[in-house]
Image (cartoon, rainbow, N blue to C red; front, top):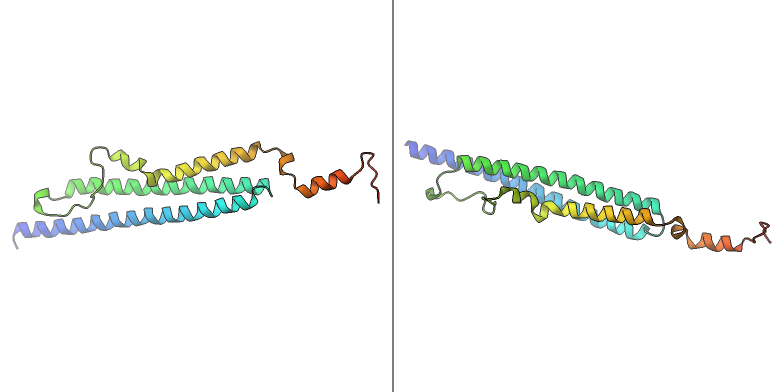
Length: 167
């Protein structure tokens, strides 16, 4: 076996391994974004149903939405770091471009790799976290009189001002 053939096989093996690891990280990003979208939709739906019924529950939903967005953001940053490290490894070990090997990272920003960390898929959880922060702030500003159920105010007006209830 010639040294060129051995090098080709080793290059193909390295390329296949890095491509497989990159595909795994991309699938993790996809799973996290799908899970994030589903959870955020459910939380916004729950918030819509409970908005005027229970202020404490609405605040809890907003806090849960904020926390889950941050957790997904951390997971996406972790995947981006993994892909970035794979890209660095690929740049060190890839064969020459004229050798005919297909690129592993077709859309990785070569000149500004930091752009990977500000892509829309990474920033989406940050946008949701900011939205949940705004919702929590709105819920905090709501006065207790605005959250009193209508039946409680109707019963309160039926009580006479002298404090003695009429039968």
